[in-house]
Amino acid sequence: MPNRMNSRWRSGVGGVLVTLALVFIGSTASAGSWESGLTRSADHDFDAPVPGTYSLPVLGEAADGAVIDSAGEPSTLHEVHGGKIVLLSFIYTRCPDEKGCPLAWSALYDVLYVSEEDRDLADHLKLVSLSFDPEHDTPAAMAAFAQKTHAAQERASPWAMLTTGSPTVLKPILEEYGQIIAPRRDPETGAITGFTHQLRVYLIDGRKRIRNIYGLGFLDPRLLLADVRTLILEARGEAIR
Image (cartoon, rainbow, N blue to C red; front, top):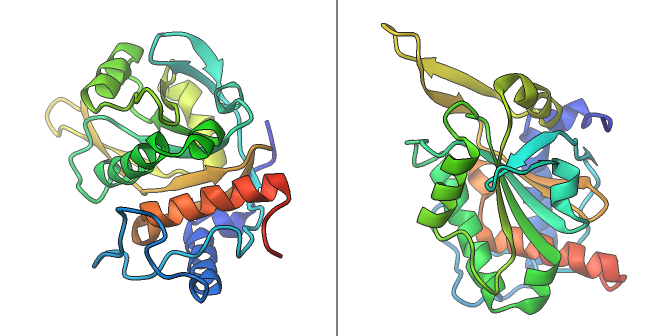
């Protein structure tokens, strides 16, 4: 298992601070709407940086772990990555909190739809969502969720919907990524009815290194796209230093 992320990033604060700094670094070169159809909003009232005008630090190694895809095939996170740039989200399909998983889905859908019209983006990026509710989110449930939410677009970046074999298998993966969850239980039956969790999306480069962590205030598809494209340019040696 790769080394864990530096503890100062595991709290989630560091990723936000890095993102904030990079927004201002690149904003002087940005007109604010370089990405067609995506604009600043009340929740994300800043101009996204221009891709390639800044660099992203390496925050740590992206951990591996045993997973199961929506077809029921066993794999590992690293195998799923396939050498691509990855946006990894930890979710559960019955999440009712509009500021939780649905917010992550919304941002990733925007990225997905942009990739339908951008062959370069579609070829280099993979979206990965891993459920932290394996007892409910079986492979069949993840497949149904993907179909219901139209996550598979013919020309877009691939989107892998993953689960694990059990909470025991899942636990070390969550620990390695610092993804905090707490089950909510029915007071009478003790059954898990949902989860309280910290919303985080991880940007992972083609060398399986974490390059940014997005929390609630910075989960803006414009910023995700700028960072992904910056990594694409970096891999080609074209990023501005």
